[in-house]
Every structure is written in C-alpha cells, then in structure tokens.
Length: 233
Image 1: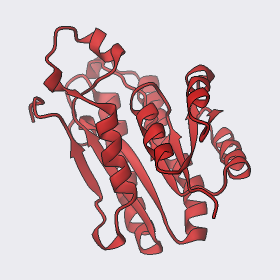
Image 2: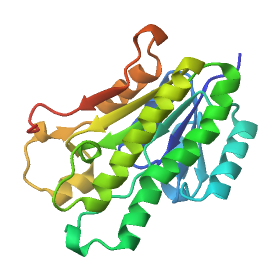
Image 3: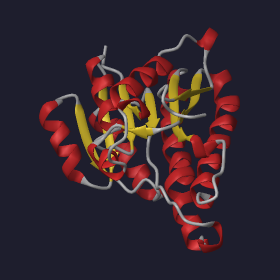
C-alpha cells in the first residue's frame, strides 16, 4: 500500500516545519508549499519523505498545477494542513482596500483553492482531513487588525461550510485557533525578555494537528483552541 500523503500549504521554519516532521515521522509523504524554495530545500535534505513545491497559493492556476504535480510525484492527497497566511497590523482608518484584498487573498482565497484541490482526491477515496490553521483574530477583531481579523474570520466561516458539506461524504474539516506567540527565533526577537510560558511550541502544536487528522469519524472535532497557560484569554 502506498504511503498516505499530507500537504502543508504555507511551509515555514515554525509550525510548517513541525507539521512536516510530525507527519513524516508517522509514515506520510509530505508536500510542502511555499513561495521560497530555500527553507523547503533544507527540509528535503533531512527528510526524504518531504518534497517542496514553490507555489503562489493565491493563484488558481499555480495551485492547480502544483496539486497535479503532487498527485504525479507522491499520490492522491489524504490530509491538507492550510497554514498559509499574511499578517497585518494597522489601524482601521489606515487600512486600504488593497490591504484588505491582499490579506484576504493570502488567508481565505488560498484556503478555498487548496481545499478544493485536496477535496477532489478525498471525495474519490471517501475519506480525508482538511485542517485550517487560524488565530485569535479568527473569532475576535482587535483595534489594529481590521484586515487580518476579517480575513481569518472568513477562513473560519469557509471551514464551517466545508465541514457541513464534506463531513457527510467522509471528509473531516477542522479549524484550529492558535492563541499566542509561536516559539521561533524571529518571534522571540520581536518580543524580547518574555517568559517561556507565553510561547507555544511548534512541535506541541503539531501533536494536536496530527491527532485531529486521525480522529475517528464518530467523534470529530470541528474547532479546537490552543494556547499556553501563560496566555491571557
């Protein structure tokens, strides 16, 4: 039997890398999607089960071409983890229509495009899992997050619609609210001097994502929120 295939759309050195390593350790072949080739190439060196695809996930043609290559190289998609995002912090009155559109395309539109491609394989198989990586902004808009919060909320609502439509056909759709700072060198540098308990460990997040992807259909979870105990909520 061929190994199952997981697509990580939005590969990076934090969560994306952790998701890739977690699923590869469980026997999956992992397709990594990102704009930049270098980080994916480094992962390929240490994980033979991982393969990178340079892709603009906001471009319908590019997404279609990439998924066609994944099917040819690795096989049909069993799991999609949508980790692609564009973050923006700007006061509401300074948020331009272009800002709103760019953030919406990177979050909500890219999710639609990748999920539609993955769902075609899953529907043919009668099973699969699609997991959307959200944020606190998915459920609560802050004063300086007009573009980001509205895009993440759109992504969450899209996931709800997908879950209702695809669930009866064997596809588990789940949304994950990540509430807090991810423990990466870049984030640490942005907020120096913080205590360890405010940071989320990417490997620990990946454990939760893997559990969601493998849940029994009789006890599917649509939404889970993840935060360290030091995060105020």
